[in-house]
Amino acid sequence: APEFVMPEDHFTQTVGVGLQVARSGYRLALEAAWSERSEWQPWGLPGSADYDPAHEDYQTWQLSLSKNWYLRNFRKIGLELDWSGGENLDRFSKYQFGFFGGTRVHGYQIGKVRAEEALSAHATYGFELGNLLRLDGVADAAWATDETSGLDQELLAGVGLQGTFIGPWETLVQIDLGTPVTGPDDGIVAYVVFLKLFD
Image (cartoon, rainbow, N blue to C red; front, top):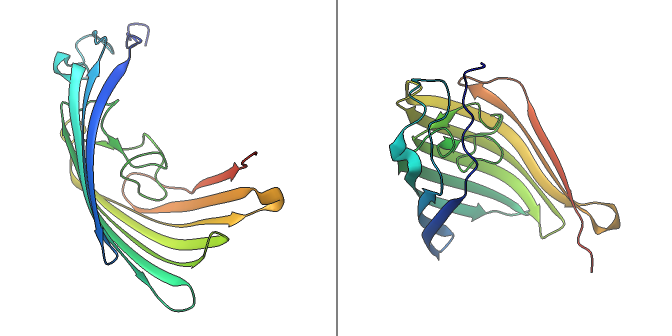
């Protein structure tokens, strides 16, 4: 819209702290971060609730518990539970559920759903042969809450296949495929990444 005001260019300074404890295949992780924007002027449509002066500073925190079981014939099972929350989050700092989000649900596009709080669960079953080959079937579920968009423990779920293997010329190839099972998204999301290290 012609009256839409773009956000001002700015820097965000973030200070974070994390704690991890691992024992007997269990891993407990706690992370918290405090962020401050260098500039935070009104943006969006005039009178819109998207802009709030209080969002100049915001906090995020995450708690996760995971466990891996290693079986015969190079197989493994993994389970993980995560809780993510924050304060003064806006559309640029809320949790997202795509490939690059901190609370991933396979099959969801980045930016499709944003949430102030999420409880998520992840299960994997796969095959791992050292650094040569890793292939996992994945199931993800998240219960997303966001007051602005009206989400109240909205269930997002997806399944996928992810793997890593060594390609030609010692190239590391990573594949990731996913499709939503329930929630406000559909279709298939696919990522293929090639990594090459040079001496």
